[in-house]
Length: 441
Image 1 (cartoon, rainbow, N blue to C red):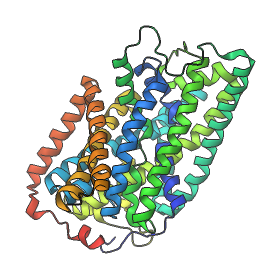
Image 2 (image 1 turned 60 degrees about the horizontal axis):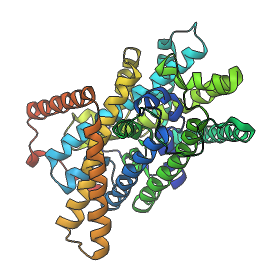
Image 3 (image 1 turned 90 degrees about the vertical axis):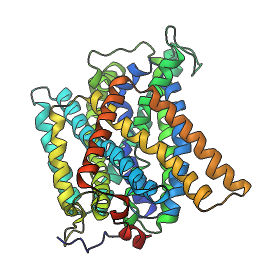
């Protein structure tokens, strides 16, 4: 393998949107339904609306930075180039936490849902099987992964549309039990609980940011990446709002016996064994798609961090035939097997801390790059590149503060580990090799 090889630039807008939606996995609404429903006190729609507002401003900031630095690396590259290498490393380390655990969550949900359907087969067997399939497809190439993901994403959208159509049909038959006020607060649920739920619900929108790690494999990235980000966030918001509204209005008192498999239990309540079986079938492929896209994202981030000497050089190696970071893919596949021992709730907490930290600094990077460094201060620039990022940063910071203590402690521990690693390697700003990134830009 040679680190002088380059990634293939062959992804179109459709490919990129597909990979983003695959990473996000629209079916995540159901696979994490129990955790999110409980965390928001049953007020899922309100939590989704608040999370969407925060995410939308942040998505616009990602689009601005993708135009400025059309290279892979996502939040790591943006903060490194607009602020300084040390901040960039810490943000990259934080987003690495998000991407690492996203892979783990994908195979974990695969195991949970398959075990719920086929109880005689241990979840660990399904986890190992999913990991092997994801690893092989990712090694073969990103376009193969994107084309396979396109089919799986379409399956998810069709299932969600059919599920919503079924609930609408029943609503007209008199199924509405909670009235038609979509944002009415349920008795005993405080607004702070809804806000705390919004900090968890942000997990459902993660994925739009992941496509920025594929910039060097995307055609016309300055145009394609910002457009894809907006499309992904708007499509996800529409699907989540409609689904959350219908469930909340028709099944406001739904409870589950197992928080991890609440989505499966919801399907049994609404449509019996037939709907539950169809749900499991779609979940199999949606989680595979999420696993493939998550693997692509984290391995490309590792590739960039290896290329800039923040990780060992082996992370920057590319397979001479497949032109993929095979070492990173194999390593992440091994790490993904930790899903056998980790709970879904713990994994989501890790992901949310890493993602929200990256979101905060991407918003600040827009201000640092365009307003401070480039001095672009026209009325339009001040609104788009100062006011909007400040609103996004404010929302995200507030959501970080709403994370529970265990999430903050886990995240802080990860950052401390990153700081220790940085010091041990003695990676100083003057020695960080950004030449490769500058050359790519």
